[in-house]
Length: 213
Image (cartoon, rainbow, N blue to C red; front, side):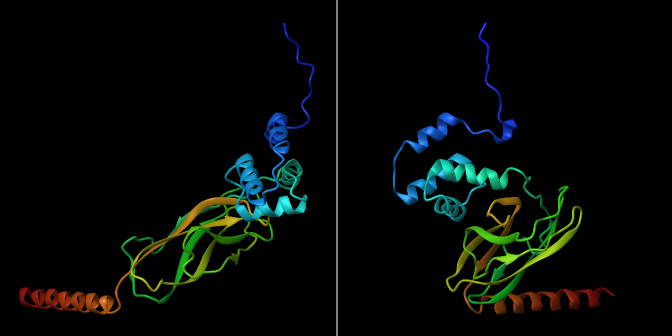
């Protein structure tokens, strides 16, 4: 019978395969972009590009040191939780004319057991930002809800646009449900024509109702 005399140095969820770390550390690459990609691959989807670059730069672009540094910061605390409660204007057929400013609102809930830490923010994770900038979010208590608001501007070129937003911890780890803004930009003047046709249709229905009474 084989006997394993090794001892675990910590919880299983925090252990990193030493052979994998050794493999990366021995590659000897000095290409910073490649190191960023390797760190993202090792740590998974919770690590975005800017956060990977931050930890590598902080550790003189040493991959193994960057991994250890990341887990020293992130492992002691669980990621916050967030659930989307409602998206009042979630409609892929929502149309807007070019270069129009509008407000996007999501109703979200802290469905976890911990308060959101100071420094959490909402940022664009993929797609187009629609002119919106990252915004700070409140330190929401467990079970509490809030409305997240972004001021957006429709692009100048007609077409369908998708903007995916995520909540992030102060160190850049995504958490919670993804938040979407999907709009269709139409030619200028199209909205006015559509509203006129809708108005005429309403008038026609009203007149028919009057004859029936």
